[in-house]
Length: 69
Image 1 (cartoon, rainbow, N blue to C red):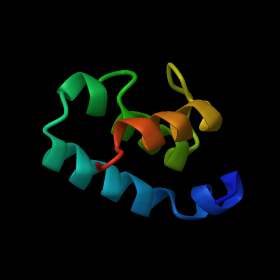
Image 2: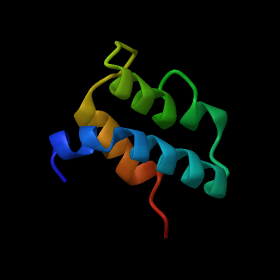
Image 3: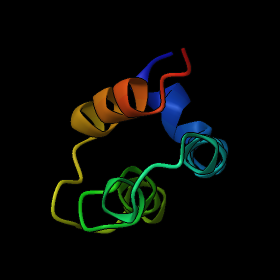
């Protein structure tokens, strides 16, 4: 998926991040903390600045942190 396609589906990505974070029992720091994946996805969706609002870094974190294996 390209960055543009990811951005078009950002709310679905945030929703999926919430569900997987809950199922994996991820910490608050990893989810809604300043650098948490859900927090950063919301910054991307809103188009606002944050501590690490870089789509490449957020997508990498999304891929690794939310991996179901």
